[in-house]
Image (cartoon, rainbow, N blue to C red):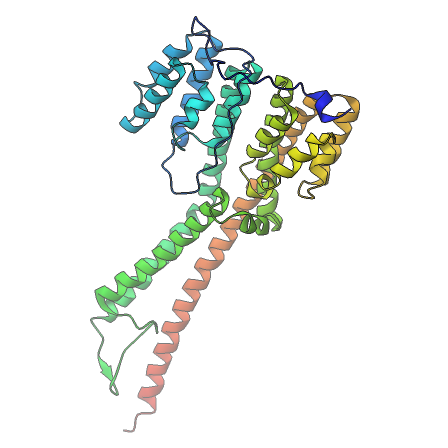
Length: 386
């Protein structure tokens, strides 16, 4: 059975609306807007807390049968001014007949691409309420894992900040006792810094290094540097497992929903791969959709890229043979979610250990430098002729 036989072709209709005449969400809308290119700049986006609350409220309201326009009108009165402005924009576009996904994409990056893509699938499957509630649960899990990560590295980071300020204090004190010994200024730490200006330079340097690392990691995850860096990260033992599990959990979930909607097979795969939010997989989207267009099965199309893991390909092949692709993909989603949580715990432990080692190294080097300076001063006094 080919991919085309498993997914009903789409019938594009430009006039299709996200809501019916009574304001209810249109079930099974066949409108298929194109995915906008992802933003790669530093764009202000909705906060995690606001996004979780938004998905929960809208999903619950749709489930209760509330008028979709009234839902977004209500959202436009909540939160900060910038948030209200974007919600007002969504309300206007939905009221004009646009799909919710299109309206969200019109916010120019304020709503995450994953949310927009999943909302589009939800509208096509007639399960927008369930998709939004699932997104809320997903983002809650993400927030919980971030809290776990931050909690894990909190103590080593406190030690790092403490060591930084202690060293800065030594540099500042060195400015007061910066006397000349044999015509050479005292430099206890050997950094060439002294006084208040030296302490500030040291603190600024450490802050710049930390900010650079954080920015580089954020850029790596968002794909600012293209697919090459993320491909390298995917090969690392702990980090790669974590990135792979998160990406495939999103892919399998959106894939299952897309197949259930009866969308065109190529469109299903396009949305599913885009949902990974991972350049390592996204770069193969065109090749996979082209293979499906030639009549290959899903697992054959994914396998030819050599980018997807064997367990995913085997599960997909087995599901296609058995004719239970949707159910198997949803089970696989659960497995990848559990795998992602385990990988995140391992990543937290590794980050904690690395941070602790860096702090220990900084402290040991500072103490060793001060000890060598003190010993050198003792030798100079001992060897000084009486």
